[in-house]
Length: 399
Length: 183
Image (cartoon, rainbow over all chains, first blue to last red; front, side, top):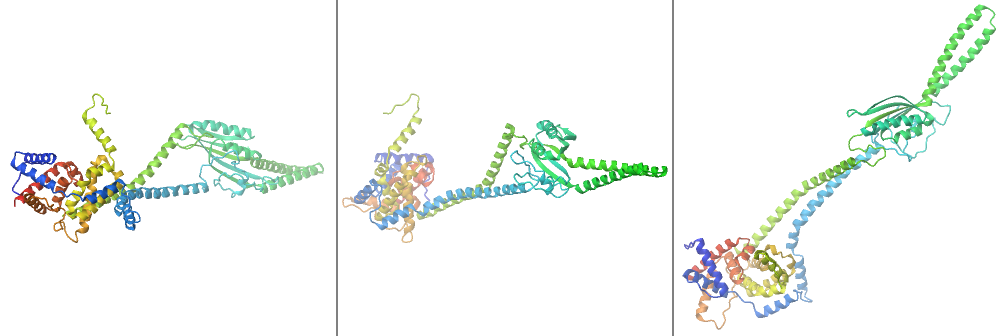
């Protein structure tokens, strides 16, 4: 350790003196210490080795030519290739490759993971009975025949499927009597509920049916409506098509019950009762005594009562088979759903969709960043440590 | 012809001029300006003429291939070139370290000419002996300053130090050399 411990001012002054000497090429300081350093600096400058002129000429030529590899020299080609593919270059590229990989791999992972639930949802939606189905006029209407294919009395919602040829189970046969019940859930925005309700009544009347009872609420809380309709069976198909086009069909259920046997039995019993009545009337005309006539009248009263009862039964059966029971439930559409009967959505809907899209994108981005950021940090840290180690290893040559 | 707007300060004009100069300067100009100093620096560090020539050629070729990677914001072009030369020289030193360390290496860079005067010869011998007393880092600093003729700021860029730290270390090393010359 030197005993010479100069102040900062002295250091600055002597360094300035050294710089002056190097710039001017002579030691000019009046101060002995500084002048000594100036002379030493000049001596050190003079000690600088000079290149061999031959080497200088050769290198200058190569530099002017852009350092071409020596022609025909395998070693030069190898050296050039080594220079281009230096491991150091690859090492330097590793962090960047790591960062890119760290970003790309999570994106692929998240995208593949995010894609799966959508597919599952789509599948379950297609097979489930609760999916919203929008019927259209081009074959999306519900075929009443489908009701007969469903289990008797079943109320499972069925999807509207276009195209299948109608099955001939009962409707085409005049001797079969089918009692039909249709449940239809329509979804509409609250502000369109009144219009849909009016159109339900209008459609019912247009197809020769009638509204048995109805209720409608359009308040902010619990908006909705219920309609019990009777629609002629022979008009059921077009009527259902028109009703489905009024709003989004949330679900639909159909059931059918074959009452042909009850109808035939009642009709036969009525015919028999009528025949008996005719017979009794004839016997009454031919009665010989008052007692016989009284007994026949008593029997006639019973038969007439039976005929009236059977007529009522038959009329009730006919009403139930000639008119299908259609129950329409009107539901308020949730926010963000497409509640319009045929529109492409309002500006608010578009804004809502855009917000959902942005939120989804942001979600994916956050997931990607959650994976990529730590990887990028690790890669960056690795690169920094690698660079420091390389520098330290290189500088160890000076130790 | 340079037309200067009124009210434009020197501080604004000077960097533009420098940038224009650096853009006009080709690699050939850089080579002409720096070749002797780069060689002197490398030779001072390696103390072996043959190795110094190889490393100097390698450094210029490497700089030529990487010339597009130079960024003016990270220092002067000379500092960038000397950084490349220094890395090449240190790599060479590491390769040679098994055979002979820096301290005990063969010295053939300063062969004396026939016309050297006795006094000058004695002085050079003294300085060389003093240089031999320095460790590797100190000799590297001296070589960058006096053989490479770099400014303290440029040396700081190469060594990863501040300009003032370079000045302090430089003063300490020269002082040590002076004392070694007196011994």
